[in-house]
Length: 133
Image (cartoon, rainbow, N blue to C red; front, side, top):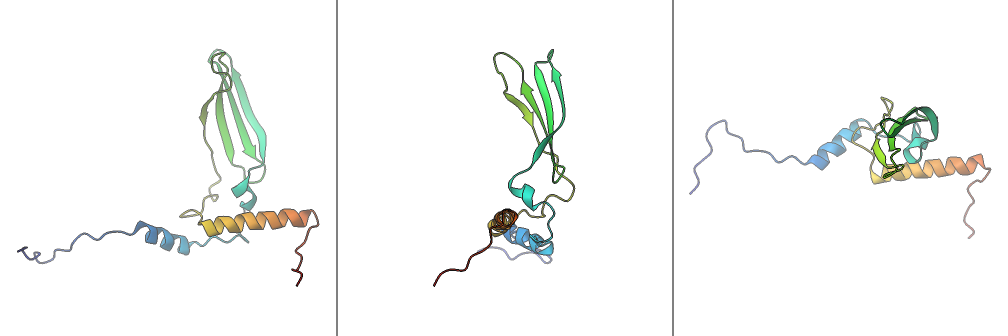
């Protein structure tokens, strides 16, 4: 027979990390109408920002910057004959308010795709058509 728990003892509580993540997300709800980087969530618009050719080190350093959100993507490529163009290093440096707390749900990612697709169609004069019925 198991001994009773001592006074003041509380058993470990299992944390439902998904519930915590959902709760945190609900505190700062993603809104496709106010989020400033919608276009970039699908595809950044990269432009040259900076670069250097380091022949002695056998490397090319290049930094691209997104024209919309200012995210920077520095990369190091190999200049060596044995590994031409091999990606040696790469990362992203996002603006402070780019990330959504808790990440985006599949539904929210769908909202982003739909918002971007409808905006693109509107730019080209294509509007919604009612179903024939």
